View (cartoon, rainbow, N blue to C red):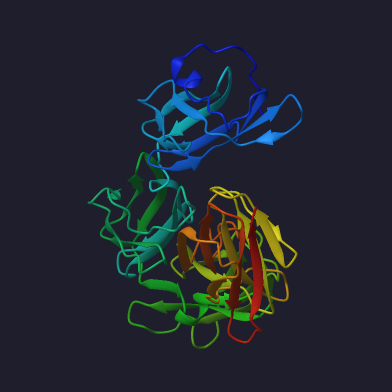
Length: 423
């Protein structure tokens, strides 16, 4: 925390002196001593004066910004981010001042940060139907966005045509082979790009995962993976070797041959712990009787198990989360903390079951100056990381001391509660 002790002769600071203010100020402390915001966000500052006799006072303090083009500050000490850049906000009382470093960032979180076409190479036949290319596209919030504005595709039209065939949060591209040749399908959005090599050969075969192989799976629960090989006329192709691989979990076995229905089947068991992601990529490699090789790919969302417990988290400011392990949490008057609740399964994964949250004010004199409830499911759910889960949250603010009790319910679990104490 920065502490600056030097005389300041500005009339705006000296003019704050009143009889009921500390007459012997020595040190001023402002919390926090550094603020990082995106344009349009706000952050409250709290300043205290330590007197020579050891008393801590909170008198009226004068705040000002050294660069109003970057950030301004209200008389109450709330920093408002105006434009990208850096400046210093000063807090003054009588002859002492303190400073807070303020950095304002351009908000690129809604833009695509990660674009990954899976796999790097695909092969198709002129008479083998279309090819499906799964891809991952996430923004700065780590949310999946399959059809962001400005998403473009380029490929040699003499070889194939391509389009974005995504459905909901399942991102995929479709390639329709036109003639023999090799080219690259290039996807671009928000300055991020990726490509996949596309090879088209003459042939009369097609291979694809069955519908039940894709969709979703549960942690620790075995699931069959099936790939079917057919001729252009829909006749099953038997006895073709298929090699399977996955990005998470285990396969048994890892390779097999197609049966009389043209199906190659293995068993996939997702891992019990999701870690940082719940999107599993699936691959199956084979070769057609013509000698042409083919790689089939897809991906599956792996969901946590049923919730067996609830967890509470405190977020004092954006992108900072602390788990609450007691029945209450204490915060500072004037701050705007957010409290989250989320379900946890028997393996410790955060679940995709939406909690419900309510609250009641336990102190008659407490008046909530701000309250905002939120509940949603998706990627990057605080504090799960970037895998799919559901949470409920509430943001509270009070200018006086008091206590608020939060209640959370998840189907199948007993109601849990947490007290938020403003001091």
